[in-house]
Length: 343
Ligand code: OKP
Ligand code: ZN
Image 1 (cartoon, protein in one colour):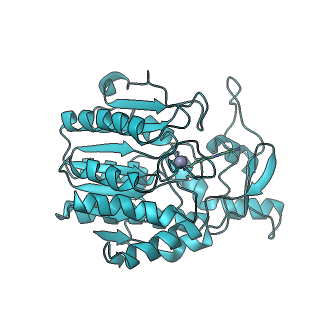
Image 2 (tube, helix red, strand yellow):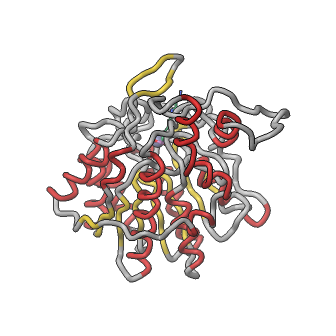
Image 3 (cartoon, helix red, strand yellow):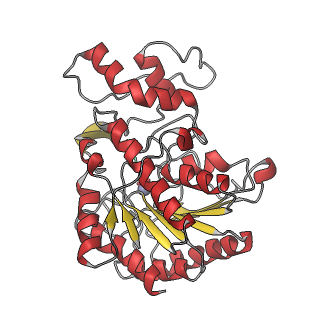
C-alpha cells in the first residue's frame, strides 16, 4: 500500500511535557514516525510518497475558523509576548465552566480558550507539521478514492483528540476527521474505527450529531484513562447521530482475547452501517510495554488486528495516531499493515 510521509514533522519536536505535576521527557517525538518509515521500507509495505497540498479548505469543513487561524499565528504571538527565545506555548489559564467570558483577548486568553490540556505545546514548527499531517491524510484519502484498496498516512502530530474548536492530547487538527469529511464531500459513506489506547474524543465530538459518519472506538476506560471526560459506553450519538457512535471502554490490563471480542463487536457494527470506506485511527499504544498505557497486546496480536480489519472487505485508510514504545513501535505498526495485506 502507498505510504504518505513528509519530513516536515521533524521540526515539531516537543522536548518535555507536564505529567503528574512535574516535567517529564516528551513521548510524542519525531523518532516515532522515522522508525516506522524505516520499517515500512525494510519490510516492503509499499512506496513512500510525499503528500499533495490540499490547502486549508478541507480542514475548515470540520474545524472552527477561529481555531485554524489561532494555530497558524500562536507561535509568533507567543514569542512576541514572551521573547524570541521563549520555549513552546503552553496554556496556564482556562476560562472554566460557567465563566467563559471573553475569548478573543491576549495570547493567554486565546490559548486557554482553544487548548484543553498542557500536553500539546505549540512550537515554531508545529503549524507546518500539522498541515503536512493533514495533507498526508487527504493524500491517502485521494489514493483510495482513485481505487486503491488501502493507504497509510504515516504522519504526526496525531489528530484524534482535536475537536472542532479545541486542541489537546498531542493533537492540533483532526487528520482522520478531515479525511472522513472529505470522503463525505466526495459522496462516500465513511466508518471510523479508532483502536488507539486513548478514546478519540475529538473525532467523536465532531461527528456526534451526525448519522452519515460512524465512529467506533476501543480504548482504556475513561474512568481511569485519558481523556477522562469522554469515551463512556452510554455515549451513543445525539439527534440524527443517535446510534452512530459506539464506545467500547475496556479495563486495565486488557489482553488480546478480551480485546478481540470487543473488536468483533465494533466490526459487526461497522459492517451493519454499510460503509464504502473504513478509516482506522491506528494507535499502537495498546502494546504491553507502552510507557503511558495499560493494555497488554503482544506484537503478533497486531497481525491479527490487521487481518480482522481486512475481513470487512472495504477500502481502508490507516491513519497513524499514538504508540510510544520506540523499540517496538515500528514492528507492531507494520504488523497491522502486513496482517491487512495478507487478510
Ligand atoms: C495521545 B494519543 C497530561 C498527560 C497527558 C496525554 C495523552 C495523549 C495521548 N498530564 N497525556 O491518543 O496517543
Ligand atoms: Zn493514544
